Image (tube, rainbow, N blue to C red; front, side, top):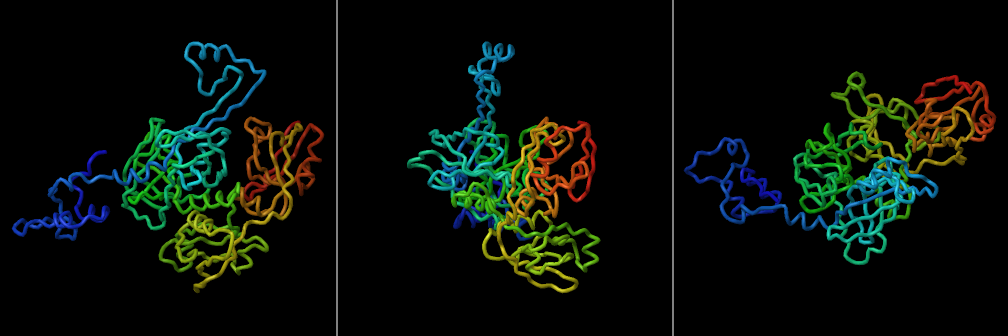
Length: 492
């Protein structure tokens, strides 16, 4: 590990490492030496190290504390094909180059593989990683820092945060959980370290600072509120730890901004506060994360809206619509209210509001600070999950129609919350669309609401099943896509 450059301000080193005495005094030049400009401006002056101890300052003690909690995650999806025949090219590649990753095995098996990192967060063997590391995988192994290997089971997947929780099978003694730090107290400029398995080379530690907080335009999950760091993060670091100088987990490394695939010093981590909420759900035995339902749609505040409301600058989120009998309506929120804070924490945009509200859990209440007209007030909002007001009655369409290859469900507040769409009063929702299916080629998308087929209203999946049982020469389909009604005609 390279030594810390001696040009670092001594006062900064004293603050970060708890050093005092000679180190702190070394920032004060002799009385006869002209006072440096930086010192006159209130900053510590550069100083020559005054002893061997100052030259040997290192992050090694933090690494020794944190590294045993970071694991390598190897995930795979093995698809067995008992009667499959390997192609001539597969056979050629296997004969001359060995087994081909992603190709067919000797018994007609096709394997997909994924490599990432994870962090032990519980002495029972619970590990948190990124969902994209194990997405679509059915076999998971983890390798500890001491090279012990274990099989792991998948406990919980949460695509909305891109987090997942797995558990070591029969861990025995010797697993070292990493304590959670407080990501809410991080500040831009704080030292952090990224620990993971980049490119599969083995456990690697990189060091940097917090470059920015509350980044919202990353696009890797529904909750856009990332820690940005210049600590080098590369493919394979996904799911690894971002730690503070006490060796505590402050984030899960999840994405990078790169045009080459390598690190350009712009990496993003999911804050520990969100990670802890997902881990707590896994500890409680849940297979999914249950989040509070507000029942209101909010929008950004533009400069024009801010000016019209007498604000100095755009801040908060504007209530655009309310669902009937929702917690928002019951709390007395009204269309046009401006939500400024959630339990005293400022929210500047819909992403920050969604993140803050999601952390509140599904019990008790939270308080919104709002601006209504020219007056400010506080409203208490009851916390609870979105209700499943009617059974989903999942329908996977298999008959030839524009819906062939689509999975549809009855709508409810719970379904709308999962799909991040407004709760509709009619129609059935498209939950998923198979790749290369007729439904995909017809342009159906997840979140679409099917309103009518050939002029007949669709109120439930049973209606749609009945209307698509018999092949037709022509189909007229009406859908609601993000509030816009679209009608399309397809040939049979």
